[in-house]
Every structure is written in structure tokens, then in C-alpha cells.
Amino acid sequence: MNYKIKVIDDFLDKQDFEDLRKLGNNLNNKKDFNVYHNKINNSGVIDTVIDENLLKRIHKNYHEKAMNILKEICPEKLSLYEYSDFTIIVTKKDSKFPIHDDTPRKLLSGVIYLEPDKNFGTIFYSDKKGSNKNKIEWKQNRAVFFSRRERETWHSYEGDGLSNRITLVYNLNTNNIKAVYDIEKKNYFYGNFRFKINPYLSRFFKFTI
Image 1 (cartoon, helix red, strand yellow):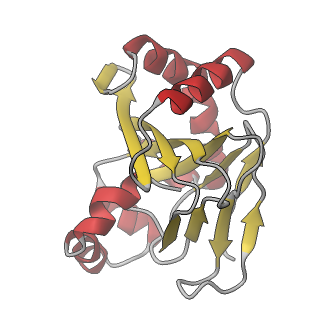
Image 2 (cartoon, one colour):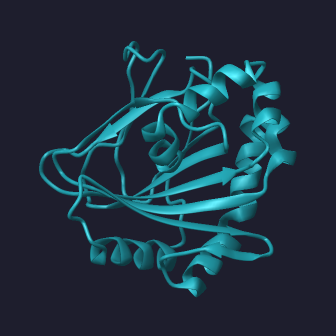
Image 3 (cartoon, helix red, strand yellow):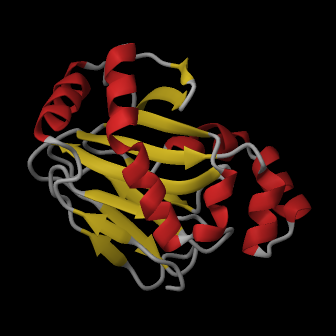
């Protein structure tokens, strides 16, 4: 694989981890993938379905940390940052999310494993066919970060068949999609068209890891 994956244990402070874990357990989980999406930047909350004070606290506590991770693994994208996504995803125990490479609006893609104690983590691949599996093991409060690259950063996840999988997806985002493709030395028109013609990709993959 030609991209960096950064794994950090005990990423969240104890209180933040407990509050997010409890929140995830109390959310509706009727669908295969239950997505609770929240956006914020340094000017304030943009959109949220959870308590605004919790969202502001999480952003304040981890924004600099996430920016430093982006600076480490893909510094050329640092100046494109505009807003953060904090999305809680409750995945049903028998659900599997297909191999994908993330939307170009994500400068930094991250996931923190919240609940339960044991489940399946994230699987990375060298191609869309699923070659050269690299499994990141599940551990509560473990964070996994990478910076997406068009048709390179292939990954997937799934439940373990025993328990629902609850995660906090933490993304640093931009609206300057063309600049992302320029940095990645990829074709903007082809890449943008690829996501636009597939509403499933553009609607859902922007939240997942």
C-alpha cells in the first residue's frame, strides 16, 4: 500500500469517550447503518443532531490534534481545511460495508472505536478487488486515520455478527474539490463525475470508515 495509516490508542479523554459511548448506545439502530452526522468549524456549529455543547467540546479538544495528524501524513492538504465532521455510526451486527475509497472532500479520514469491547475494526486494501488485506484490530478508544487518495485508499468494515458496532467518524473536510485532485495529481473531471453519477457513493461514503 502506498498510503499512510496512523493508529492511536486512547485517542479520546476518558470523559469524552464515556459520553460518546453512552450516546451511541442510546441512538436508534433500526437500519443496517445508522448515521448521525454533525458539522462544525472554528466559527461554530454548522449542523448537528446531538447536543451542541458536546459537539463544541469534542471539536475544541481534538481539532489541533487532528490537524497535526493531517500535517504529518499529508501536509499539502492542510491549507484546504474548512470544517469538521463528527459522525456517530451504529452498524448492525450482521452488516457489511463494501470496499470504497472515500469522497474527495475528506482531507483526513478518521474513526474512533467506541462500543462494544470486541468487534471488527477496519480493513485496508491495495485495490478495489480486496488484495493485500491490512486489518486494523478493534480496540475501544483506538483511532485510525489516513488521508484519502483517489482510487487508492481502499477500505471496508463490517459487524462481527455478535454485537452492533458503534464508532465516531472524525473527518477534516473541504469544499475545494478541484484543489484536492490537483494535489493528488488525479483527473478532477473524471473523479468528480464518478461520485456525482453514483448517489450512493456521494451520499453515504462521505461519512464512513
